[in-house]
Image (cartoon, rainbow, N blue to C red; front, side, top):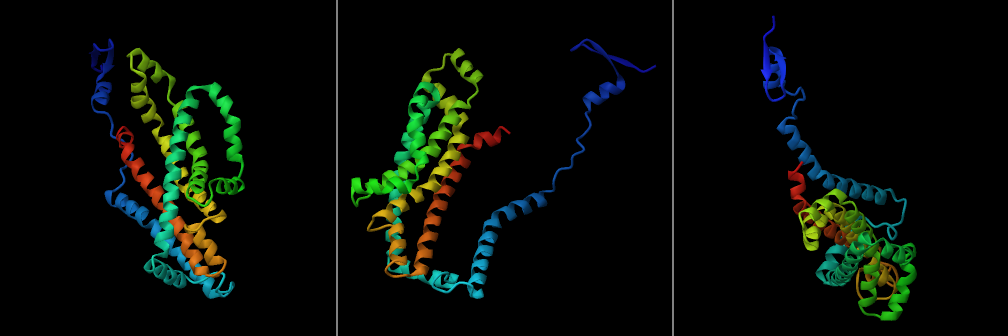
Length: 293
Protein backbone atom coordinates (compact mmCIF):
# COMPACT_ATOMS: atom_id res chain seq x y z
CA UNK A 1 0.00 0.00 0.00
CA UNK A 2 1.47 3.39 -0.94
CA UNK A 3 2.52 5.58 1.96
CA UNK A 4 0.40 8.71 2.49
CA UNK A 5 1.58 12.06 3.86
CA UNK A 6 -0.62 14.74 5.42
CA UNK A 7 0.06 18.34 4.37
CA UNK A 8 -1.22 20.74 7.09
CA UNK A 9 -0.95 23.80 4.85
CA UNK A 10 -3.94 22.73 2.78
CA UNK A 11 -5.28 19.79 4.75
CA UNK A 12 -4.94 17.05 2.10
CA UNK A 13 -3.19 13.68 1.87
CA UNK A 14 -0.53 13.10 -0.77
CA UNK A 15 1.29 9.94 -1.84
CA UNK A 16 5.06 9.70 -1.50
CA UNK A 17 5.56 10.17 -5.23
CA UNK A 18 3.56 13.42 -5.15
CA UNK A 19 5.57 14.76 -2.19
CA UNK A 20 8.80 13.97 -4.00
CA UNK A 21 7.54 15.74 -7.12
CA UNK A 22 6.66 18.86 -5.12
CA UNK A 23 9.91 19.03 -3.16
CA UNK A 24 12.03 18.19 -6.21
CA UNK A 25 10.28 19.68 -9.21
CA UNK A 26 11.51 18.44 -12.61
CA UNK A 27 14.10 20.60 -14.29
CA UNK A 28 13.04 22.52 -17.33
CA UNK A 29 13.61 20.66 -20.57
CA UNK A 30 14.34 23.91 -22.34
CA UNK A 31 18.03 24.13 -23.06
CA UNK A 32 19.81 27.37 -22.39
CA UNK A 33 21.59 28.98 -25.29
CA UNK A 34 25.38 28.68 -25.10
CA UNK A 35 27.20 31.82 -23.95
CA UNK A 36 29.33 31.79 -27.12
CA UNK A 37 26.21 31.88 -29.31
CA UNK A 38 24.83 34.81 -27.33
CA UNK A 39 28.11 36.72 -27.70
CA UNK A 40 28.12 36.02 -31.43
CA UNK A 41 24.63 37.48 -31.81
CA UNK A 42 25.61 40.59 -29.85
CA UNK A 43 28.70 41.03 -32.01
CA UNK A 44 26.67 40.66 -35.20
CA UNK A 45 24.15 43.24 -34.01
CA UNK A 46 26.94 45.73 -33.35
CA UNK A 47 28.57 45.36 -36.77
CA UNK A 48 25.29 45.20 -38.73
CA UNK A 49 25.14 49.00 -39.25
CA UNK A 50 28.66 48.89 -40.70
CA UNK A 51 27.66 46.08 -43.04
CA UNK A 52 24.62 48.08 -44.18
CA UNK A 53 26.81 51.15 -44.78
CA UNK A 54 29.32 49.08 -46.75
CA UNK A 55 26.58 47.61 -48.94
CA UNK A 56 25.06 51.05 -49.63
CA UNK A 57 28.42 52.61 -50.56
CA UNK A 58 29.29 49.57 -52.69
CA UNK A 59 25.96 49.79 -54.53
CA UNK A 60 26.49 53.53 -55.03
CA UNK A 61 29.95 52.88 -56.55
CA UNK A 62 28.53 50.19 -58.85
CA UNK A 63 25.84 52.58 -60.13
CA UNK A 64 28.52 55.20 -60.81
CA UNK A 65 30.75 52.71 -62.63
CA UNK A 66 27.86 51.42 -64.74
CA UNK A 67 27.60 54.78 -66.48
CA UNK A 68 23.78 54.78 -66.37
CA UNK A 69 23.81 58.35 -65.08
CA UNK A 70 26.32 61.06 -65.97
CA UNK A 71 28.87 62.15 -63.40
CA UNK A 72 27.22 65.52 -62.75
CA UNK A 73 24.01 63.75 -61.63
CA UNK A 74 25.47 60.93 -59.49
CA UNK A 75 29.10 61.51 -58.51
CA UNK A 76 31.27 58.73 -57.13
CA UNK A 77 31.75 58.20 -53.37
CA UNK A 78 35.37 59.26 -53.84
CA UNK A 79 34.36 62.62 -55.32
CA UNK A 80 31.91 63.23 -52.48
CA UNK A 81 34.59 62.35 -49.91
CA UNK A 82 37.05 64.76 -51.54
CA UNK A 83 34.43 67.53 -51.47
CA UNK A 84 33.68 66.73 -47.83
CA UNK A 85 37.35 67.04 -46.84
CA UNK A 86 37.71 70.37 -48.71
CA UNK A 87 34.53 71.85 -47.19
CA UNK A 88 35.66 70.84 -43.70
CA UNK A 89 39.14 72.28 -44.19
CA UNK A 90 37.89 75.67 -45.38
CA UNK A 91 35.25 75.80 -42.61
CA UNK A 92 32.25 76.00 -44.95
CA UNK A 93 30.56 72.79 -43.83
CA UNK A 94 31.13 73.38 -40.13
CA UNK A 95 29.72 76.90 -40.28
CA UNK A 96 26.55 75.91 -42.14
CA UNK A 97 26.09 72.79 -39.99
CA UNK A 98 26.30 74.86 -36.81
CA UNK A 99 23.60 77.24 -38.07
CA UNK A 100 21.25 74.35 -38.90
CA UNK A 101 22.00 72.60 -35.60
CA UNK A 102 21.15 75.77 -33.67
CA UNK A 103 17.81 76.06 -35.47
CA UNK A 104 17.07 72.41 -34.73
CA UNK A 105 17.91 72.63 -31.02
CA UNK A 106 15.98 75.85 -30.45
CA UNK A 107 12.99 74.50 -32.36
CA UNK A 108 13.11 71.20 -30.47
CA UNK A 109 13.26 72.96 -27.12
CA UNK A 110 10.25 75.17 -27.88
CA UNK A 111 8.17 72.56 -29.70
CA UNK A 112 8.75 69.74 -27.21
CA UNK A 113 8.13 71.95 -24.18
CA UNK A 114 4.79 73.20 -25.47
CA UNK A 115 3.81 69.71 -26.65
CA UNK A 116 4.61 68.12 -23.28
CA UNK A 117 2.68 70.73 -21.29
CA UNK A 118 -0.32 70.82 -23.61
CA UNK A 119 -0.36 67.03 -23.99
CA UNK A 120 -0.49 66.55 -20.23
CA UNK A 121 -3.36 69.01 -19.88
CA UNK A 122 -5.30 67.43 -22.77
CA UNK A 123 -4.76 63.94 -21.33
CA UNK A 124 -6.59 65.02 -18.16
CA UNK A 125 -9.22 67.25 -19.76
CA UNK A 126 -11.41 65.91 -22.57
CA UNK A 127 -13.14 69.29 -22.99
CA UNK A 128 -9.77 70.91 -23.76
CA UNK A 129 -9.12 68.15 -26.30
CA UNK A 130 -12.42 68.84 -28.08
CA UNK A 131 -11.61 72.55 -28.12
CA UNK A 132 -8.06 72.32 -29.49
CA UNK A 133 -8.23 69.22 -31.71
CA UNK A 134 -9.45 71.04 -34.87
CA UNK A 135 -6.59 73.57 -34.65
CA UNK A 136 -3.94 70.94 -33.93
CA UNK A 137 -5.10 68.62 -36.71
CA UNK A 138 -5.28 71.54 -39.16
CA UNK A 139 -1.66 72.47 -38.46
CA UNK A 140 -0.58 68.85 -38.85
CA UNK A 141 -2.57 68.27 -42.03
CA UNK A 142 -1.07 71.32 -43.75
CA UNK A 143 2.39 70.61 -45.25
CA UNK A 144 5.14 72.62 -43.62
CA UNK A 145 6.26 73.97 -47.00
CA UNK A 146 2.88 75.72 -47.29
CA UNK A 147 3.21 77.99 -44.27
CA UNK A 148 7.03 78.18 -44.06
CA UNK A 149 7.13 81.09 -46.57
CA UNK A 150 4.65 83.02 -44.41
CA UNK A 151 6.78 82.50 -41.32
CA UNK A 152 9.87 83.65 -43.17
CA UNK A 153 8.04 86.76 -44.44
CA UNK A 154 6.71 87.61 -40.99
CA UNK A 155 10.03 87.13 -39.22
CA UNK A 156 12.33 88.26 -42.03
CA UNK A 157 15.74 86.69 -42.63
CA UNK A 158 16.62 85.86 -39.03
CA UNK A 159 16.69 82.54 -37.27
CA UNK A 160 13.21 82.97 -35.74
CA UNK A 161 11.24 81.76 -38.78
CA UNK A 162 13.30 78.55 -39.06
CA UNK A 163 13.02 77.90 -35.34
CA UNK A 164 9.22 78.25 -35.41
CA UNK A 165 9.01 76.00 -38.48
CA UNK A 166 11.04 73.36 -36.64
CA UNK A 167 8.93 73.75 -33.48
CA UNK A 168 5.71 73.23 -35.44
CA UNK A 169 6.93 70.10 -37.21
CA UNK A 170 8.18 68.41 -34.00
CA UNK A 171 5.14 69.46 -31.96
CA UNK A 172 2.50 66.97 -33.13
CA UNK A 173 4.37 63.63 -32.65
CA UNK A 174 5.40 64.61 -29.14
CA UNK A 175 1.92 65.88 -28.27
CA UNK A 176 0.21 62.65 -29.32
CA UNK A 177 2.72 60.43 -27.53
CA UNK A 178 2.38 62.42 -24.29
CA UNK A 179 -1.42 62.11 -24.46
CA UNK A 180 -1.28 58.37 -25.16
CA UNK A 181 1.40 57.80 -22.52
CA UNK A 182 -0.44 59.62 -19.73
CA UNK A 183 -3.78 58.02 -20.59
CA UNK A 184 -2.23 54.55 -20.65
CA UNK A 185 -1.50 54.67 -16.90
CA UNK A 186 -3.81 52.07 -15.31
CA UNK A 187 -6.74 53.59 -13.42
CA UNK A 188 -6.31 51.21 -10.48
CA UNK A 189 -2.83 52.63 -9.87
CA UNK A 190 -4.30 56.13 -9.75
CA UNK A 191 -6.85 54.89 -7.23
CA UNK A 192 -4.08 53.28 -5.17
CA UNK A 193 -2.12 56.54 -5.04
CA UNK A 194 -5.21 58.39 -3.86
CA UNK A 195 -5.83 55.78 -1.16
CA UNK A 196 -2.35 56.33 0.29
CA UNK A 197 -3.05 60.09 0.12
CA UNK A 198 -0.32 60.88 -2.40
CA UNK A 199 -0.09 64.51 -3.47
CA UNK A 200 -0.65 65.62 -7.06
CA UNK A 201 3.09 66.10 -7.50
CA UNK A 202 3.83 62.61 -6.16
CA UNK A 203 1.29 61.08 -8.56
CA UNK A 204 2.93 62.96 -11.42
CA UNK A 205 6.56 62.12 -10.59
CA UNK A 206 6.20 58.61 -9.16
CA UNK A 207 3.37 57.19 -11.27
CA UNK A 208 2.52 59.09 -14.43
CA UNK A 209 6.00 60.00 -15.63
CA UNK A 210 7.59 56.54 -15.07
CA UNK A 211 4.59 54.76 -16.61
CA UNK A 212 4.38 57.05 -19.66
CA UNK A 213 8.13 57.41 -20.18
CA UNK A 214 8.56 54.62 -22.80
CA UNK A 215 5.83 56.10 -25.00
CA UNK A 216 7.09 59.67 -24.52
CA UNK A 217 10.65 58.68 -25.46
CA UNK A 218 9.32 57.08 -28.63
CA UNK A 219 7.71 60.39 -29.53
CA UNK A 220 10.99 62.16 -28.76
CA UNK A 221 12.84 59.87 -31.18
CA UNK A 222 10.38 60.75 -33.92
CA UNK A 223 10.59 64.47 -33.17
CA UNK A 224 14.39 64.72 -33.26
CA UNK A 225 14.51 63.09 -36.69
CA UNK A 226 11.87 65.51 -37.99
CA UNK A 227 13.66 68.56 -36.59
CA UNK A 228 16.14 68.66 -39.47
CA UNK A 229 13.23 68.82 -41.93
CA UNK A 230 11.77 71.91 -40.28
CA UNK A 231 15.11 73.71 -40.18
CA UNK A 232 16.09 72.88 -43.76
CA UNK A 233 12.67 73.73 -45.22
CA UNK A 234 12.96 77.19 -43.71
CA UNK A 235 16.45 77.53 -45.17
CA UNK A 236 15.23 76.48 -48.60
CA UNK A 237 12.68 79.32 -48.57
CA UNK A 238 14.95 82.13 -47.46
CA UNK A 239 18.31 82.03 -45.70
CA UNK A 240 21.89 83.19 -45.98
CA UNK A 241 23.40 80.28 -44.01
CA UNK A 242 22.63 76.67 -43.10
CA UNK A 243 22.71 73.30 -44.84
CA UNK A 244 19.55 74.07 -46.81
CA UNK A 245 21.16 77.28 -48.06
CA UNK A 246 24.30 75.31 -48.95
CA UNK A 247 22.22 72.88 -51.04
CA UNK A 248 20.57 75.78 -52.87
CA UNK A 249 23.93 77.36 -53.67
CA UNK A 250 25.57 74.07 -54.69
CA UNK A 251 22.80 72.98 -57.07
CA UNK A 252 22.04 76.48 -58.35
CA UNK A 253 24.85 78.80 -59.31
CA UNK A 254 27.70 76.34 -58.73
CA UNK A 255 26.02 73.13 -59.97
CA UNK A 256 28.28 71.24 -57.57
CA UNK A 257 26.57 67.86 -57.15
CA UNK A 258 29.21 66.40 -54.79
CA UNK A 259 28.64 69.34 -52.43
CA UNK A 260 24.88 68.67 -52.52
CA UNK A 261 25.58 65.07 -51.46
CA UNK A 262 27.86 66.33 -48.68
CA UNK A 263 25.16 68.67 -47.35
CA UNK A 264 22.45 66.00 -47.51
CA UNK A 265 24.62 63.39 -45.79
CA UNK A 266 25.49 65.96 -43.10
CA UNK A 267 21.77 66.53 -42.47
CA UNK A 268 21.39 62.76 -42.09
CA UNK A 269 24.32 62.64 -39.69
CA UNK A 270 22.80 65.38 -37.54
CA UNK A 271 19.46 63.57 -37.35
CA UNK A 272 21.12 60.23 -36.57
CA UNK A 273 23.29 61.81 -33.88
CA UNK A 274 20.28 63.28 -32.09
CA UNK A 275 18.43 59.97 -32.46
CA UNK A 276 21.40 58.15 -30.92
CA UNK A 277 21.50 60.58 -27.99
CA UNK A 278 17.81 59.97 -27.30
CA UNK A 279 18.39 56.20 -27.54
CA UNK A 280 21.18 56.47 -24.95
CA UNK A 281 18.90 58.57 -22.75
CA UNK A 282 16.17 55.94 -23.12
CA UNK A 283 18.62 53.17 -22.20
CA UNK A 284 19.62 55.05 -19.03
CA UNK A 285 16.13 56.14 -17.95
CA UNK A 286 14.52 52.73 -18.48
CA UNK A 287 17.10 50.63 -16.63
CA UNK A 288 14.52 49.94 -13.91
CA UNK A 289 12.17 48.46 -16.50
CA UNK A 290 14.75 45.97 -17.76
CA UNK A 291 15.67 44.92 -14.23
CA UNK A 292 12.04 44.14 -13.38
CA UNK A 293 11.70 41.68 -16.27
